Length: 61
Image 1: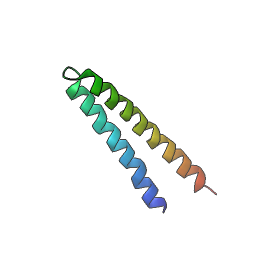
Image 2: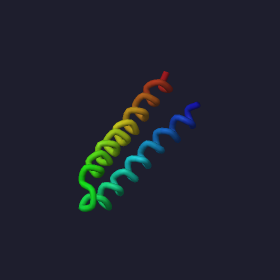
Image 3: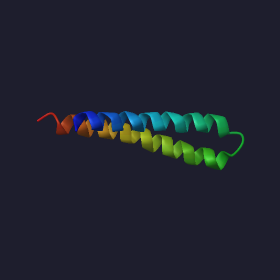
Image 4: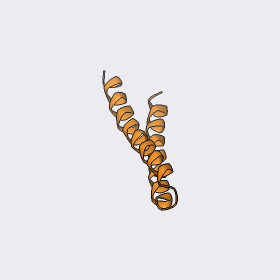
């Protein structure tokens, strides 16, 4: 299960990077969509660090 949670955490980081790229591509085209993508990127990156920290605390025992 530890390996699966590592994969999920890294998947959040990849999704966050994809959203950041989408922000840069669409900033001048549709600014409202870019703000939503920026919010989603921030959430995905937060989830990466949260999952990593929680996994380390849980499997430290």
